[in-house]
Image (cartoon, rainbow, N blue to C red; front, top):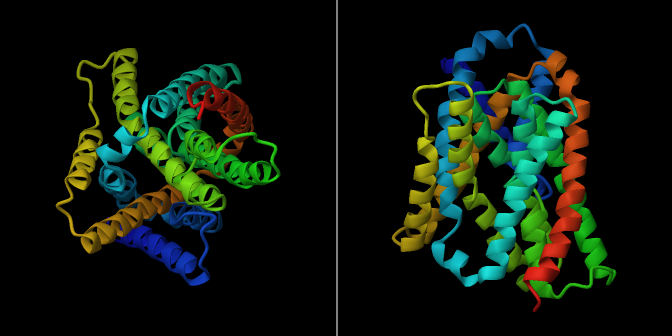
Length: 323
């Protein structure tokens, strides 16, 4: 077990160091750790099974701790300040994209777990959502790797496209509306930060807050999926994800203001490290023979959901946020 954990830590550390050295903000350490892990898995497929116990620990226990600590990034006050329009938009986006994606994915030939993972990554918060749902579904690592890949591709596409359309005067949205639109429809938190920052402080602030509301909605989604999967599989005991409850608890801690700023920053960086460990472990466990089997349908589903997010989210922004 020890060497598998060390391998996951090494990937997380190298990802954070590389991005810090180059000052890169377009991708997160989570994504880079996954890419490195997948590359190593491709080059040394026979060596990695010996690390399976440690990789499983990083991909499950460490992952759940990381998801719980993710709540330190948001406060209840920030949520309340948004108003009813943006909150309603966030809820509609998450519900429609997740349920719609699950239905469309099955009709594209995806298995249930893959359809749910891709839909969750698009609907909620990208990589972190895929990881959290993977922990509930207990799905195979290659399915999560495919889902994360779709999130990365379409998240980066939206991150580049949205600011270009706004700056060209083609979006027709006010700065407030543009912030809501970005936060309610882009996949990754990093995508939202980069796209919002490119358009000014007002856009960036509103974009990040509405994005974190979507992150918060991950909790009822995880509990709902846990109940649904438990009943559908005939389980006598339904497993409620404990890390979802701790996630809310961490929001409460952040909202209370009891943590000094330096400690809070350190804990958030530590959480990024833990999630990067989980992503590295996921990459190292990727089976590329299975990856190829579902990749095409998964990307097709993600593309459909990207169009739904972009067009439907734009319409909702006009309808629910007139100012």
